[in-house]
Length: 336
Image (cartoon, rainbow, N blue to C red; front, side, top):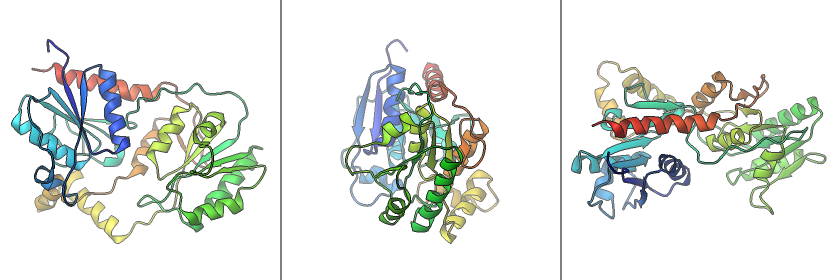
C-alpha cells in the first residue's frame, strides 16, 4: 500500500481488550481511531447489527481490529459493505474463523487450527518488561477472585494461605500477599487471620496500592489461576512465576457446553452442524479454559505449577508475542 493503512479499533470499553488492540496498533505505527460501540437491549451477538445505537458509516478504514463477540459481528458487517477492508479479531470472535482475515488468539479460547489463525502464548501487552531487581526479596502472592470455573471461597483461601506460608517457610522467606478488587470478603477474612507478621497482607482498595511494588520487590511470584492478566503482570516483572490452581466447580452446564463445543467445533461429529452454527453465531459460547493457556506456558518453560520446579525468567518473551502479531498483520496487509 502506498500510504499507511487507516485502522478502526472497535471497542465496547473493556480495558483488557482495548489495551491489546492499542498495543498492536501502536506497534504497527499506523494511524488508528477508537470507535466505542454502544448497544441497546441485551447482549446478543447475533443481533449486534440491529442493536448497535450508532451505525458505522464511510469512509471505511483499511483495517478493523476487534475483540469480543459483538464487536466481531459489527466488523463482519463492515466487511460486507467494504470488501476491501481487512478484519482482524483478537481473542475469540463470534462467527466461523473463516469469516475473518486474521485471528490472533490464545490457547484458552480453544479455536481449532486454521490458515488465518495465529495462536500466541499470551495476550498482547504494550507494557515494557521490567528489569528484575536482584536480591532475596519476599515471595509475592497475587490473589484474584472467583472466575468460573475457578473458586475462591473461605475454604479455598484456607488452603491457599496454608500452602503459600509453608512454601515461604521452606525457603526461609517472608510472604507478601496482595489481593485484587475481585477477592471476596470470605477469602479476605481468612487471609487477615492467617497472614500475620512478619508476613505482609495488602488489601486492594485499602490505602496505597502495593500490587506493582510487591511484584517488583519479590524474589518469586505466585499467582492464583483465575486471572490471565495477573499472570501477564507477573511475567513482565522478570521474576520466576508459578500458578496456584484454585479448586474448580465443573458443573453440569460447564460439562455440557464443553462436550458440545468439542464435538461440534473442535472435532466436528455427524449431525452436529446446527450446534456448530449456534457457536459460530455467538448464540451460545463455551467458557474459556485458562488452564490450557497456562499449560502452554509451562510447556514453553515460562511458568511453573505451584509446588513443582519453576523455570527461570525468559527476558523478551512478551515482546516476541507482539512481534509475531505484528509480522502476521504486516503479511496480511501486504497481500493484494
